[in-house]
Amino acid sequence: MPIIGFNLNKLLVEKNKPVERGITVNNNLEIKDIVKAAVEFGGKAEEVLRFDFEFSAEYNPEIGKILIAGDVLYIDKEKEIKRILEEWKKTKIVEPELFSRIMNNILVKCNIKALNMALEVNLPPHLTMPLIVQGEKTEGKEREGKAAYIG
Image 1 (cartoon, rainbow, N blue to C red):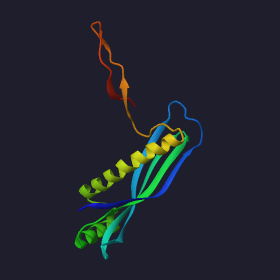
Image 2 (image 1 turned 180 degrees about the vertical axis):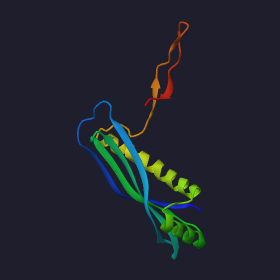
Image 3 (image 1 turned 180 degrees about the horizontal axis):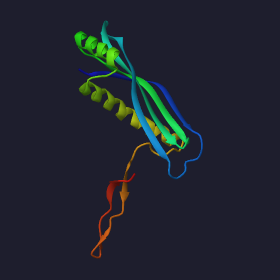
Image 4 (image 1 turned 135 degrees about the vertical axis):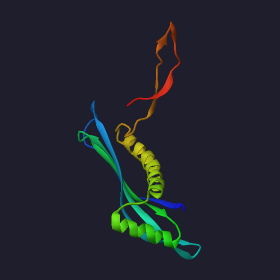
């Protein structure tokens, strides 16, 4: 069943000191809770699951951080909603297929938002970006430049 909503509730970016060489960035994404919610479709209330999440990128040593909190709304059959919620309450685990769909949806949106937030305060990207690097010389000829991941 589909993801029907994505909401941001908290956006925080702070830079505590200038960026220096040798920094590390620790990224984390966590589902904080799963609860039932009601969403209205054409005058009819439908039960959905709300996945509350928190995404963070910490720039070390204590250079800055990005924090994004929000929720994803997921709709399914009533029986499935009940089963997923019961499993969460017992084990704090979500079945792998659903877990990957929810987490990937969050990651795509939060990574884009975090990149923009980092640029606003002059922090480097929190993930490895593709860069153009000059090719090596081979037998008197120089190879064309090509995209590569440097990190």
